[in-house]
Image 1 (cartoon, helix red, strand yellow):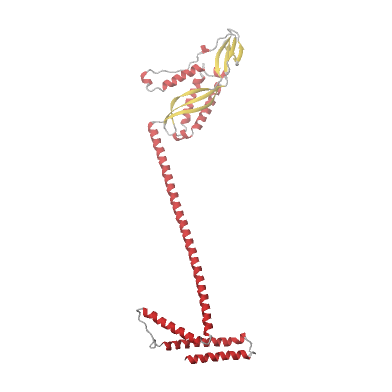
Image 2: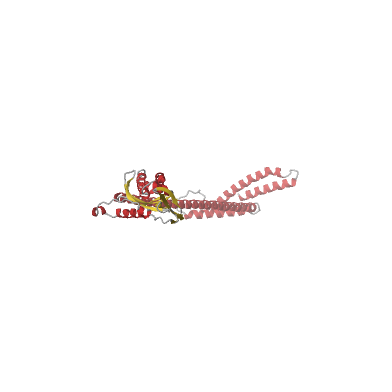
Amino acid sequence: MFSQSRLLFSISGHLRHIPNLSKVTPQIRFVAVRHRTSTPINTVIMFVPQQEAWVVERMGKFHRILEPGLNILIPVIDKVKYVQSLKEIAIDVPKQSAITSDNVTLNIDGVLYLRIINPYLASYGVEDPEFAITQLAQTTMRSELGKIALDKVFQERENLNVSIVDSINKASEAWGITCLRYEIRDIKLPSRVQEAMQMQVEAERKKRAAILESEGVREADINVAEGKRQARILASEAEKQEQINKAAGEATAMLAIADARATGLKLVATSLGSKMGANAASLSIAEQYVHAFKNLAKNNNTLILPANAGDVSNMVAQAMTIYNKLAHSSATVDTLQIPKCKSPSKKNDLAELFSDEEERRKNADLIL
């Protein structure tokens, strides 16, 4: 019986989808009819197939339900009134219009999966279980869609299916039928709404592309700035190290020059302390004087010179006088410091010291 009623529903659903059908043919009302003549005839020995339940009436009253396998009935008195399939059944829910909470009209259809769990209630609780459950699915789907907005229909599709199943099971419990699941198959939007949604999707994609592009430019600028910063840091560190190395080199050079000058001064002092040191000093001063005049002659500058600038001997004598005075002051200091270093008890050392002083004075008088 269920197979024939499903066939009628399938035909009616396909005919409803044919465009302009109402203009060509008159309106036809599709009603599911239960064909009771399709039930098995009582042959005393009955073999019930697996996953089927045969409802038997005795003298017009419910008697029992035949289980799969061998069963024996009384002729004439017993009659198989209903045959219920215990398998899972898939029913197409015809397309219908529904209005969302934001007043958008949708055309939606789906597939309903159900199973008979109580053959007695399915036979006597409702006239046509499949037709009743289909109508219930349509009304439930329409009411659930009215609770949510259009955007939520696509986002909460799974939750919508679960809500429809729960609502159907609450009502179909008295019919001995349980709804296993409901799947929304197709959602058709009005053309204007669909175009608006397409424009929204394109705008969203352009927005994401612009954001990604700006983030890429930002990352590139950050990388370039970071590279320049690192380059400047490395350059400054290199310059710092260069200055440190240069300063260290100059310090080393200055120390070397100072050591060389000190060594030279020691050698000059040692040479001047000899007998011919004064003559050598005079010669050196004269050479430096002449060399200085040679350098002055190379420039065109106007210079003020003393009147006796050409008298080399006089200038050398003046230089030696200054040197002798410096040497005298240095010797005086050494004389004052000698008692601290040497013992005064040694007369020979003191005599030698005074003799050296006298000799220096004589040499100075000779030069003058």
